[in-house]
Image 1 (cartoon, rainbow, N blue to C red):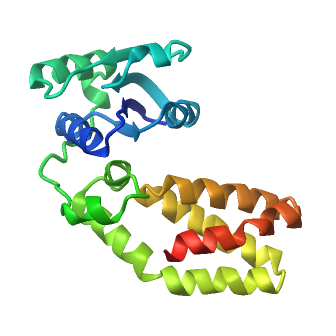
Image 2 (cartoon, one colour; image 1 turned 90 degrees about the horizontal axis):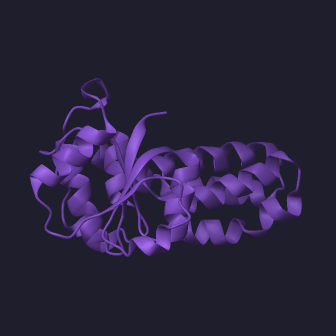
Length: 207
């Protein structure tokens, strides 16, 4: 597991701004937009610092160092933050040249584009992943629906697990979390819990 700086902002535009600046310096990053979301990231990832534009008093019970910044932030400030969190050998190749088309931010409100970009390592790779994900939505949703209607839990679980992984890769965390909980219930043969939210998953997948 790689060390990361958790960027916590209320506005996605602010998160993208800080995400890009830190990626320029080779830092590992992840984004959150609510306190609960941030706490979930801390449980699942090796977060070395929370960098936030929000009131730090709301994070008093978080056992991770917190640093507040005001925007715009200077490169010198972020360089100091990165040097405290990472040794030179822990820094990744910078991907500052990789900008995503702005229309994505207007049309993918349920997807954490910053996290998807960090996961894929480059804009080219991320756009390819998005193309594959959205290009296969109808066929994958139909498969899950068929297994759901036929109560084929084995194949249902395989497809839901695959959806969880691909959704996580592109930054669709809400869909990934829902698929993960449903897949776990299906694997445990808890048919009621595993299947009850299938319509919700399919609606979100096809939307």
